[in-house]
Length: 262
Image 1: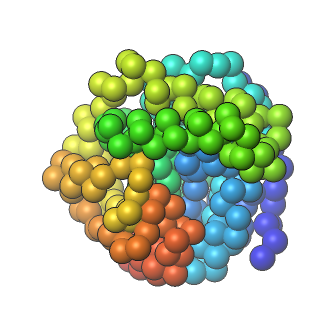
Image 2: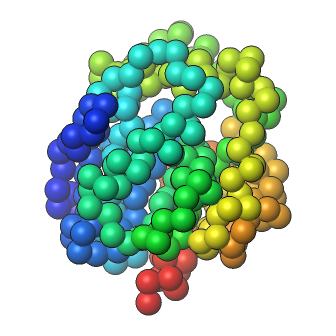
């Protein structure tokens, strides 16, 4: 399935690349996909197209600054970079794309950004959020996994793989992410304060084998969310359920969004 539109959004701080599957967000309910800490438009692969088919909704995906073909950023990123993405950049993206109604669907860092956005403002356009492998606090297992990823990147194997998707932004994407998470100041990072203010329905998805975070994140959201919560915990699944268990994810998300757009 080819994208119905693709190109760049012009924002106040630069350009972000995007793809859209389905009608204009100004005309149809839309799922906005927010990628993981090393992700971008291309790294979602065929998932956005499959999600559009499964849900019948428009799917809009973009690369944040410093990723894919979007404008680069100056490093190091601050430990508050996800706050800034959620509170400064994402509102501008939604307005520029013509978002009228729909959902935020964030993976990993993208899930955290979606949660901060939903917990920071009452946006009547937002019908619900899907948080897949989100982070609400730092954990030793996360630091260990990112340390291993840094070694793999500097040994060359991971760098070569990421260059296919990020091109000139490869170092910016990797070190912007790893540098923030491995900053000693990030050990005390916590965004649970936003959970009680999320009043829209929330779908939480995580694999039991997630190497970047424990199920404590899901339990925290279940206990503290200000609105209704659904949860999908997947067996034999790591940090990327959209790759490890795509059919399960598509079915669950389709049911969740369908119940809120009927």
